[in-house]
Length: 342
Image (cartoon, rainbow, N blue to C red):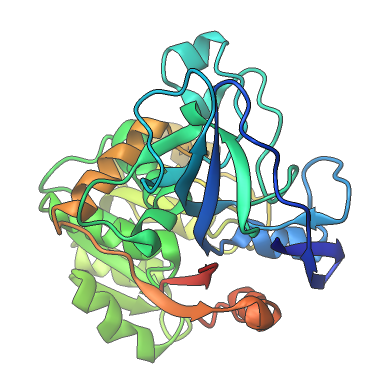
């Protein structure tokens, strides 16, 4: 069984592993269809783990699969069915899990591809409760980019920031995977979308997704452009995931009572906050991590209806995984890089 293992920092190897045993009670054996790469894969590749991990470690935190076999007591899933896979191994028993607040599980044992073996392997056994069936009209690539990419954005924009039709939003890094999803989901409900990109070749691509205004942050200070575009009022929501490099400017972009929602810190985990600005302007700073499985289901339905689409930069095979991670580290992508397993 083919798999991609991280054997040391910055060293990946294609290996042969034994296939999983027959699925146990409540489990499903999946044949992995596609793995979508994320910055969490880059962090793992760099050796930036949040918890102790044992190597070799199979990579891949976001994926789709086809049901190959079902274990005892599994209902609602049949062989051949396409599913999206929830990437965190939650307990399913705590209060948060019972209330379908999956990303607040009190006893989560880790994230696949980061703390636990990930999905870049031909077959894997997974608890059936962590699978979300893909509706007709969604293919393996679409289902692969839902668990982290579209699910994360659904949770950020609608559960946390409470984005409303007609509001104005600043989406940072509009060429990233979650940036392309945020542009589409915000535009779908009638928002004015301002986004930042890091090169001129990404400007028209972002506009094609629905962005009303695109700022090349390497050429212009985004906060100045945003203040001008909004006639100094500022935006209702900032979709933040860059971190230290943009955080102070993001706060300056908010209108009075505005909301900043963040899920990432790719440019650094620490920053300073102007507390006077925070309380005088009555700003709201919201942290967001992962998503609920219900967010995945919502995103899949919108994808099936043609309301949003996965934006794919490149599809790669096992032999190109190192180059793909280097491109992601250099932010030389627009949309997602996907590893095809079949």
